[in-house]
Image (cartoon, rainbow, N blue to C red; front, side):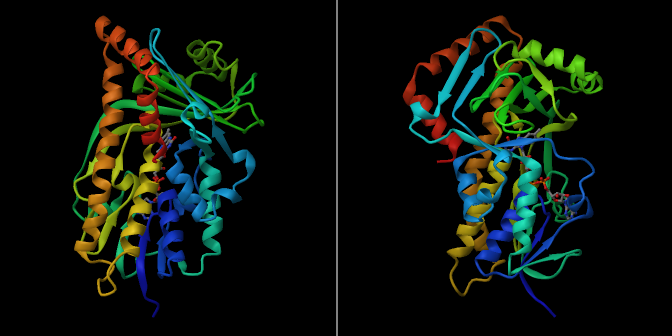
Length: 369
Ligand SMILES: Cc1cc2nc3c(=O)[nH]c(=O)nc-3n(C[C@H](O)[C@H](O)[C@H](O)COP(=O)(O)OP(=O)(O)OC[C@H]3O[C@@H](n4cnc5c(N)ncnc54)[C@H](O)[C@@H]3O)c2cc1C
């Protein structure tokens, strides 16, 4: 009977990346997917902003450079608007980095990871759990395995949904990402070369549930009118180029991410608001941390050794906590309708804009440097 070193449960981007990376280390890996994962009911219209650390991992896995050109795009400038005169701008040139982030088509990334797995010599796809020294739970926000482990995953629901869609602009995006922090919604335009080279954007618009429901029900023309009213002339006139999909938003952390013979990674371990585009970056950082810990283990220590896995938990604790607090804090600052706070937050943004060292520090954090 075949024996496995690691069982990876869940074949989203985090589970697939982990399986590929562990297989490349020579470990025997079983990857447990689900029918839902292999045949999604609708195309994922999201585009993800990934940082330099995620890019490094995907390059090492030989996934990034095989993605179709149109499915990835570099961000050279980022322009953030407050809900009054507040402005904050970042540029790769000023920060001395080749790019601030990369944008990738979510469906293309999942497909490319699946394609790479077909050639991974030590990875076997299984359709039921198999015994292994270590089980890595990567089942996303509603993980059943996390529940079976009896772990609490307290969600602080934001009462908001994120609407995602692909857009086409009349003007070239020139590698500029844009974001509007308004009260109470946050809208981001991520440049991507679909549906047309140089003129596509991925939309992520987080809104209160009732407003999101209205916008999902609105006709394409009504939706576009609302969208263009927010973005004004900044990105040129925008048109819908895909269906609209929506995700409920919450902040959550599992009470523990490791125990004897098991670890949690990705959204199964933590959920953050997408306003900073960091959920998958956190998940891929989990993968990189677990790889480092397993590769550095003493030869006599089994893979499921709890003391070993605690090193992984320690390594990830601060990063995950800080990102949850940052996204939550930003949301709270912009949720207040109070006049003085509104003017303070906008002045704060503009003040920060004129302090290059602080901007450099923030950029380095966001890049995962
Ligand atoms: C609108 C939106 C925009 C976002 N934008 C960004 C961004 O710009 N940058 C960024 O870094 N992050 C972003 N995120 C976050 C990102 O989408 C998630 O953090 C990431 O997809 C989590 O990946 P995962 O593999 O952990 O979980 P998932 O993608 O949820 O994958 C889990 C997989 O496990 C499978 N599964 C579930 N249960 C079982 C089971 N019992 N058995 C077997 N398999 C199972 C599921 O079918 C799925 O395939 C965004 C999120 C949203 C909602």
